[in-house]
Picture 1: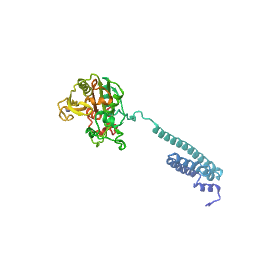
Picture 2: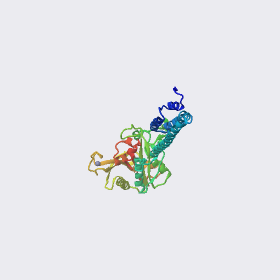
Picture 3: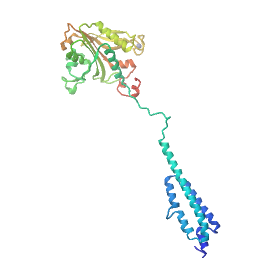
Picture 4: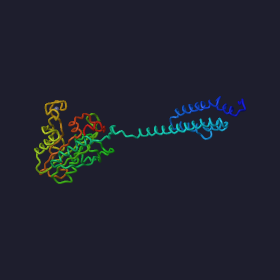
Amino acid sequence: MTTTNDPTAQTLERIGAKTPEAVAEKFAEVRRRFDKEATDSSDRERLQAFVLRWTGRKAGVLTQITDNWLKPATPELKRVVGQELNKLKAHVETTLEEKRKEIETASEQTVTARDKIDLSLPGIERAFGTRHLIRQTFEELQRIFTAIGFSVVEGPEIETPYYNFEALNIPEHHPARDNMDTFYIEGARSSYLLRTHTSPMQIRTMEKEKPPVRIVVPGKVYRRDNPDATHGYMFHQIEGLAVDTDITFCDFKGTVDYFAREFLGPKTKTRLRPSYFPFTEPSAEVDATCHVCGGKGCRVCKFSGWIELFGAGMVNPAVYGFVKYDPERLSGFAFGMGVDRLAMMKYGVTEVPLLFQNDVRFLQQFP
Ligand SMILES: [Zn+2]
């Protein structure tokens, strides 16, 4: 839309300035636009586009000003436009440089903040396992008995009816078999079963070893029970057997007293109640004075002052016949303790399932 042939006027018109003096104002306008865009280019991507828009060699704003405003200008106008253009270029350069640094620092700070280790923060706590309450009780029981000369033996959990029943003086159709609801393997009623007590190891040990015998047998035993708060179909026992030429009932009672004091405290007293087991004669239930109230009566001992510890007795001479021991010359005693029950009683656990759920919060109460 050229209205004049004057080249200076033509250039001024292209620039949009009425007079040469107004050229500076046009450049100031351009500069304000640049500054505004600079403020908006706050990240790496936007800055890249911004740089290209202004300094791009072909279509950048600076190139366009050079091509359209400077190059065609008359010599006297060129001086003004050139001067303004140089100022603008310098401003663009410094601003872009600052902008680059600004963005770099910001991203460095982000990285640093992300990677920085705050030493004042509490560390990640690694959960330590504890020895299971049953394992601890086993170890305690074994310590008590090995201290007086017993040794620890272990045996198979899959047994034959001979070792589990017959050799322990429980013949077929003996009512004692009914008390021990047995898991038989694959319905093979005559061949294998899951041991219902740790007593088979009495027989296996006496078969192999000559007297004197002093053993404890820790292990798992199985009975067909309906699991509830106080019963599971698997529980833990520790069996004891002492056989020698001169073991008397006094030795038996002395050992029971020693155990009760070691396990429940030095003031513990015991009493024996007559009982019946096929493999001991006489048989007894061993009670101890309550470890909580000391015998006065409390909720734990059901206000009787006594708690039931385990069943025991002098080895029935009939058992010696199965292992070719001489019942005339030898005597001994045996006991079978329910380890779960002892642990629950001593540590105040009321529910059997807690022992088998492996809940760390429960187990950590017994470090
Ligand atoms: Zn009590």
